[in-house]
Image 1 (cartoon, rainbow, N blue to C red):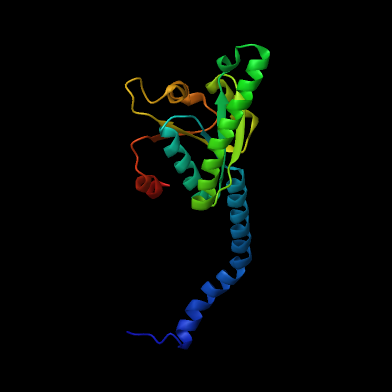
Image 2 (cartoon, rainbow, N blue to C red):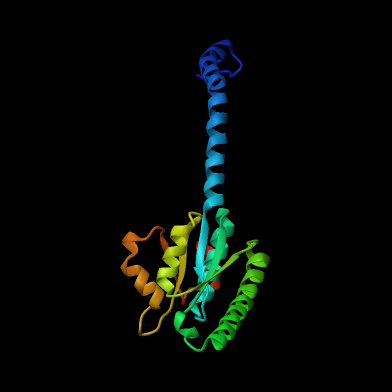
Length: 195
């Protein structure tokens, strides 16, 4: 039998439910506020660390990090590491080479930063370190609690995906953050779809 929703009997059946919802509304609002604060805090803390080098796979890693950070409210830190053997010359020559290496890194960074800002709305940070790549990466991650994910590009050469990917994937079970490995063969559209 069809019931008129405005009938007296239907109103009595709905009254306890409405009373319960009325009583729970303040708690739901507090939970919602706490949830949005928690998500905002996590989003503000999470930064994607991506490594800048001269490899082709670096481009895909940069694009993935920028789009993923944009879609999740995170940030991007671009790290470049100058190997120690580049400065084993005389002091004056080493200083000149170090300055040239930094200028080259900053020029590459500016290209990526411009792209990230225009395409993803992200303003990345630049970090330049000197030393061996893997220890410098791990040291930086441990020093900076905001880093939530390390993004690396993987090559397709016969030697493997790259020295950094190879070394870090061997010890991935003990790393302080997860690693996202972005294959060189992924297209721009595919990266955009999965971020």
